[in-house]
Image (tube, rainbow, N blue to C red; front, side):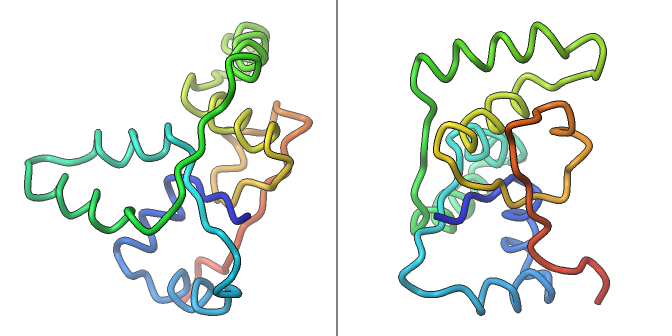
Length: 130
């Protein structure tokens, strides 16, 4: 499973050339999924119904994954421990915990958002320079 963070999905939605080239190299049998909280972030960024419909249509082919209640309990512990010391974001912790629970790396360029989550593996999937 390839698990995408918001920044990577936004690059794909904007058809950013390095993101598109990387995406085209993926095995077509590989499942690409989005944490449910990433989907919510994408919808939250919409300014009107047309944009929201466009986003929902564009992400429809991808799987959506959610953490279990136990994973949410773990995310709460991580958040309580790191929100003051590392300015941990609530959604970032939930997204990171989803990847940890699934045992897959999170494809993201936001390593700083996740640096305190020692069990989380992150991957920068492509070079941001054109």
